[in-house]
Amino acid sequence: MSAVGYLLRRFRGLQRINISITLTICLMLFFLGVSVGENRLLMKNFWSFGLQAALIAGLGLAGSVLAAWALERFFFRKEDGNAE
Image (cartoon, rainbow, N blue to C red; front, side):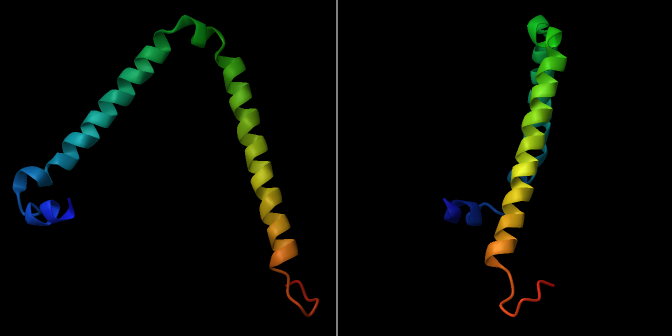
């Protein structure tokens, strides 16, 4: 497939396809937002879902920081005892 891309690299129609892909993605995200906004059950429980999402994100961040600290402490410590 990369040979086809190499042969068509100078074709002007394919160079403009990036703009159409970006516009398509933006439109899809817009309509996804509209469909979610129309869902009364989701909007009614918005704060509950938001708090759950914030809790999951916070715990994920805390776990990542803890794992990075443990890796640094146990695997990347200098041998001479100076931990700087």
